[in-house]
Image 1 (tube, rainbow, N blue to C red):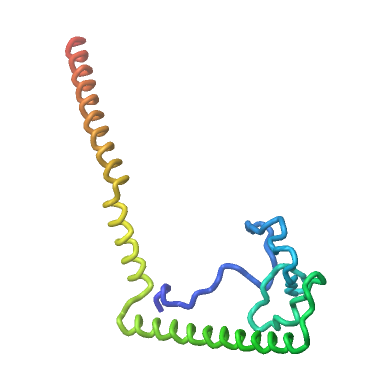
Image 2: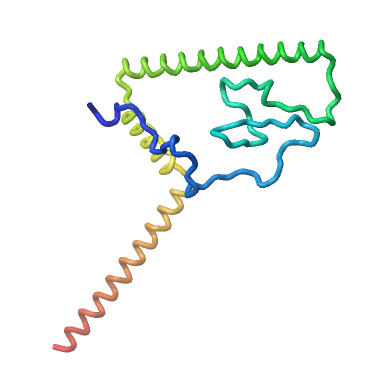
Length: 170
């Protein structure tokens, strides 16, 4: 089997936990505006505040309402819970539609004989063409051409001078 057609395997072992040698950027300050609900997610025993719940988690149970937010009536809470369930259901549906479309795309590409290697070649070719037509590339190319001509002329003059010196020594 062609190595490019093998299934992708991540180089990271997510079962081992966090590798502290990798760079991880996160804000050192609280980015949640004052008075916003505090979100807490439990992941492998750790508690991470200000995180968005993962797919499949119950968002309603992971959000704690700050005491500074006015309390809602039971009817308003029920209405919001219903809206939350509808939005979560829409997100799930859209995720399923996207996965189906991605599979359909891969199937069409396979039928057309478009491999990842062909796509890479095409992207590299297009990128190289964009580079060579850029103003910066043209200016650099012209500058290097002039420098090459001047260097060649200087080396020819130096070579002629050395040849004359050798002739004088004889």
